[in-house]
Length: 137
Image 1 (cartoon, rainbow, N blue to C red):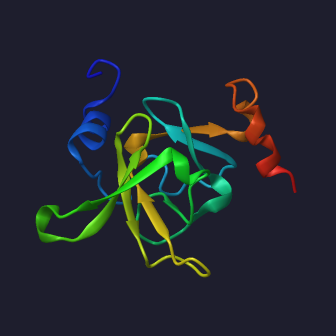
Image 2 (image 1 turned 180 degrees about the vertical axis):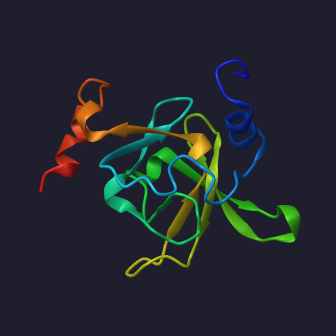
Image 3 (image 1 turned 120 degrees about the horizontal axis):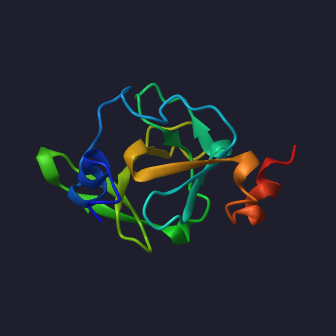
């Protein structure tokens, strides 16, 4: 796995690392598409649910499917928070907070290093064609 990932990607996904705010690939990405698990390719979040939280990390109000992520307690660094992991790959994605927009107030603050963005124009080519309907206006 080390050969397939950058040092930052490996640190985030395998060692609960966090990349620097505002110094990551997707914090200000506003293109339409899917955010998938960088390792397994599982579709996790849609650009339709992405919002600017001001945190400097890609932030979402909900996952594509709750069944594709896991939430678990994280008590590291003297903090109490909810870590978010990919269910099938069991890799660290980021954290879930309750300071998001209404109505749910959920704020999935993720690391770009744990994700790969698939633009809407590439969904069919990459086998994610069932998600094209999400982007019909």
